[in-house]
Image (cartoon, rainbow, N blue to C red):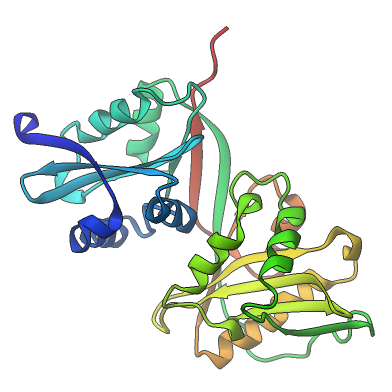
Length: 291
C-alpha cells in the first residue's frame, strides 16, 4: 500500500467533500472530532499547513501543523497499517523540536504511538457532559450594577477579544484568539448571537458564556466562559452557567457539554458542582528537549 501513498500540502477548501468525509468518518468512529475549531480556522486562513495522505483519489489521513502544535487523523478504514507513523514522521520533519501534538479521546493507539516516538503527556483536557437540568430558580442578582444580555456582533468584537485575551492570558490557544478569528467563527452556520451570553458593568464587557449549538440532536457546547479577574468572586461564572442552561432549554437541547483543562481547579470544581461528569479525555503530548 505504501508504494501508492502520496503526501502533499493542500487546504480544506481545495479538498472540499473529501476532507469533510475524512473528518465525519473519524468523528463517527471516535466519538469526537479529530481537529479543534481553532486548528480548522487556522488551516482555512493559511496559518496552519494541511498535509494530506492520499491513495489515489481517497484522502486517507491529514495533518494540521502549526508553529507550536499539530493534530492529525487517519481514516478508520486505513488504520493499523503504519499510516499514523508515516504522518507523524512527516510532521516531525522540519518541525520545531518542542512541537506538541493532541490525541483527541486519548485512544490507546495514540498512547502507543507516543511512547514509540518518545512523546510524553504534558496536558490533559476533559470533555464534561450533563443533562440540561429542568428550569429552576436563578441565583438572583449578582450585583445591582451588573446587567446580563447578548453579544452584539460588530459592536462588541474588539472588547470581547481584549477581555478574552486577559482571561486566558496563560492559555496557549484560547488566549491568542484575534478579531479575525472571532469573525470567522461568527461566519459559521452554527453561530447565533442569542447563544453568546454576556455580562456588563455599565458599558464595559466583564464576563461571557458563549454557546455552540449545531443541532438539536447533538449536545449544546459551553464553548468558552470567561470572567474579568476584577469581578471574580461575585458568582458571575455560576450565574452565566445557569443562564446557559436556560438558553439550552429554549433551544430544546437535552445535553450540555464543555471542555476544561484538568489543572483549572476552580473551573473544574464549578462544573462538577453543577453536575458535569467526564465524557472523554484529550491529551497533549510533547517530546522532552534534550540538552
